Image (cartoon, rainbow, N blue to C red; front, side, top):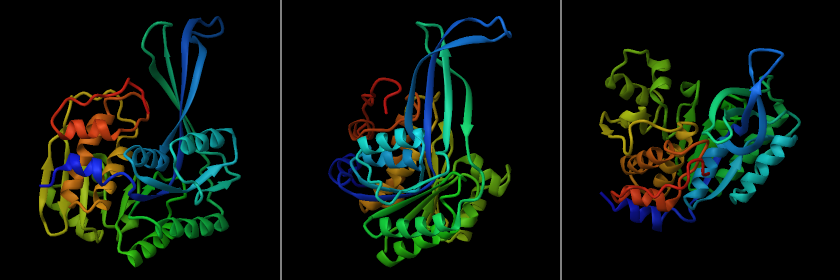
Length: 334
């Protein structure tokens, strides 16, 4: 096997990755509990700060960029305050938004309220999702398909991120895959609800629950291999939380990868985005799917030990790959 840390240092920087899909704003509202309300038996939360971070496809893009890639992101961003805050964060991360489309729909936003006593650790008490579930306009889908294909025309690997909000639809996928096939590059899919509708990609990264939704709770390894074949994919990388990952190949080969790091995660938010970003970068760097999965496994093990939607740096990843204790940044760093 190649020196994977060397590949991260020498080959990841400058790799061109196109990320296509559902762009989400992950917001964190921090507050201090001041007293109990006289109106109802609830705590009154004094607002301290609100952070807006990239979520969904935007988080996959942020992770790839943090590892040194040149990233182009194609999706919908709402013409609203949250969309502008998110666009600013993405620009700060040097993510190319030329192929993303500003629309009149509100930006999909997930607000996590974190509360605690003034000098105590904040804990999540509720999540509020702002979603527009109405169908996306045909003209917007047509334009996104064109922009996505244009983004892929300059890429070395493609991440297709489907969170079910309308951007990662079959029409856009078909345009992406056609351009990827023309250039002989791989498309890797992360689909929350409908992986079977996105057949034909090179690989996909479902978690255990998503695999169970397709195959049933009592499915076997052979069932996963057959799913890989049915989807017309070279491989299927199934993540199993603190039990690591298993890579299934269409030729029937199965390779389990043990989890790295502590078995109790701090925060699993967005871990799948980190995994697919590292996996795609490994493939773009010429690694086998198994070698890319090894890198992705370490990246996932690092990011779940951080608070909030987070990213992994190349230094952290190399330290972990080399067998050291990753020099993780302060909890909650992005």
